[in-house]
Length: 186
Ligand code: PRP
Image (cartoon, rainbow, N blue to C red; front, side, top):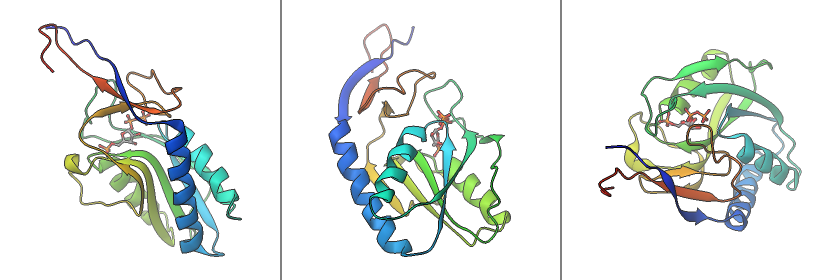
């Protein structure tokens, strides 16, 4: 039986995403007040979300420092592997900073949990989390994001930075994928 993954339906349009990110930026700006934020984007999936979120924050007079770390858990599969690998470290010191961790999707929670632990060990003053998508039904690690764009069912989503085998990251909206075997069964 060969898998034949294909794009299915658009769950959230670019316009809906933009509106939701503006609302998130408003919440974040209100909560942090004048405190400086060190925004840390977990690559690769969150690069589009991060770019739009920091510019939405600028619209609320919030100008975070920005850094990146590369963690991965999916590899080339469509479900999380359960092992989180750190591929690229931060370049800025986190010691004493208020960190806002940004990720595209919170699935099992292992990636975000690993990142939070790393940053806490490195001396962050506090660590909050902001995710565009949350799949609560898939959670393994006991973690809840402080800021969530959309909650979704257990569907595989691509677009707006999210990939399947490094494809589809360019799509402007968030689109579900269907995995069917050659018998047509889901
Ligand atoms: C995805 C996503 C999150 C993580 C969430 O990354 O970007 O970082 O998985 O899954 P979890 O909650 O089960 O840990 P992925 O490993 O696909 O790497 P990528 O961002 O480079 O595509």
